[in-house]
Length: 118
View 1 (cartoon, rainbow, N blue to C red):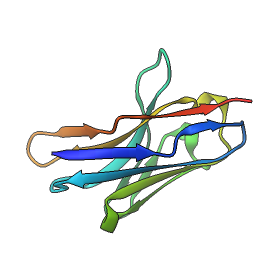
View 2 (view 1 turned 180 degrees about the horizontal axis):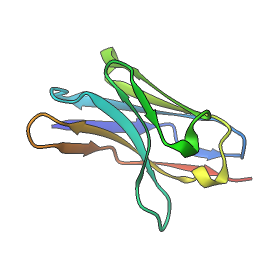
View 3 (view 1 turned 120 degrees about the vertical axis):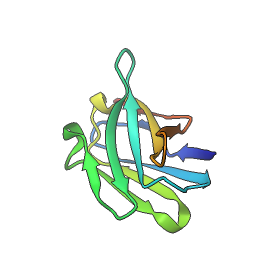
């Protein structure tokens, strides 16, 4: 079992910044990639950014150049630095850690609300 605990959400004005953190506990065997998804009201959950244990990153087009994902493998923690935030970034952000050894199983955090509004 893997537990993911997120922190760092909140209310920010357009153009502002926030930093999300997600710390994993439990067995990390079979987990290479960690990432962030988000879900806005009435919309499907979508990938925001992901990073492998080796540091390879992947970003949604809508956040490229504004968001940066990073990872501390020793602490089993992944970060999402969000800059130049827009109202369209408003959503619940979820940390994700997929176990891909054998049958895939996705672990999710509880979600943290990010609201971008003036």
